[in-house]
Length: 388
Image 1 (cartoon, rainbow, N blue to C red):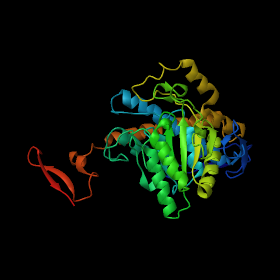
Image 2: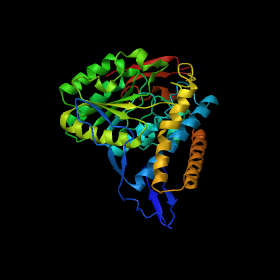
Image 3: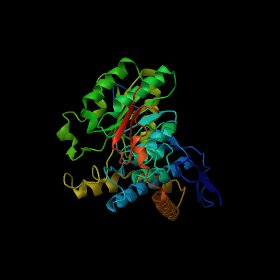
Image 4: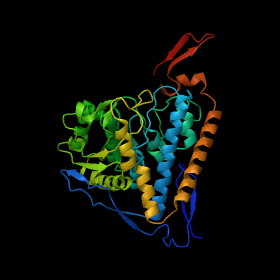
C-alpha cells in the first residue's frame, strides 16, 4: 500500500494516509481545481479560477482546517467551564481564510489581525499547547499568559497579533509594510480586519499613506457579515468593501473556499510587490457569536446558520475534493478527525499543567529593561521610578 505523507512546521504532527492500490497519484501529482465562484475585481483584472494543487496539499488543507475547527470547539467548552476568562472570539467557519492564505505566502511575509486570532496563530507555526496555555492565562502561552485570547503573538513566525482595538492593527500593518519596503525585502504584509472595522477612519488614513508610498500592504477584510450584532447593510452604505479603496484596486473572494483564498493571496502578493496596496474582501461566515457573551442567534436565524453549514462549509468542501480525487476514504478522514480530537485533548491537558505567571510578570515587557516603575516593600505599596 502506498502512503501519502505530509508535514507541516510546528503546527501539526506528521500525518500518513494508507491509500489503496487503486490510488495512483503521487503526493506531488498536479491537480487542477476550479474555485466555487468567480473573482470580482475593482480597477484590476481578476485572476483565473483554475488553481493548481497536489494530493499532499489537499490532505494538508483538510487536516489543518479540521484541527482549527476542533480547537475552537474545545475553546468554547473551556470558556463555559470558566477555564478561559475575559474576551474570547472564535474563528470556526472562517478556517479557509487562514489556511488558504498561508499556502500562498512564506513566513517572511507578515500577518497582523484583530482579536479573532487563534487559527491564524496556528497557521503561522504556533502550537496547540501555546494556544491553549495562552487562552487559560498560563506561563507557557505564546504571550506568557498575559495576553489571553485577543493577544496571540509569534514574531519569529511573522505573526504580529492579535489586537483588541478595533481597526488599530491596519495602520500597524502598513507600518510593517513600510519596514519591508525600506529594507528592500521582497515580502508583503497582510493587514486583516472585519466588516465592522471597515468603517474606521484610521483604516482610510493608513490606506492613503500606503498608496502614496506604494507599500507592499494587502488589506484583507474578513467580511463575516455581522459587526458584533449589526448586519453589514445596517452599518455601511456601501458594503462592497473591496471597492472601498477607490484609487486602490480590490478583489472580492469566496472566503469559504480555501483554493479561492490561495489564488487571491498569491495574486495579491505579486501585485503588491510591483504596484503597492490592494484590498481583498473575503466573503466568509462565523458560526459562533461575535464573542462568547453573544449567543449569535438574536440578530440572525438558526436557519441561516445551518444553511451556510450545509452549502458552504469550508471543511466539508475540502472533504468532498479529497473523496472526489480518491485520496482517502470516508473512514480514513473520520479516523483523522479522531486523531485530531485526541491531539487537542492532549494539548489541553498539557496546557493545564503549565503554572500561572509569576506576579512579577505584571511589570515586565512594559518599559525598556532597567527603566520604568518598580513596586517594592513588604506590601508592595512603595514605588521607585527610573527614567532615561
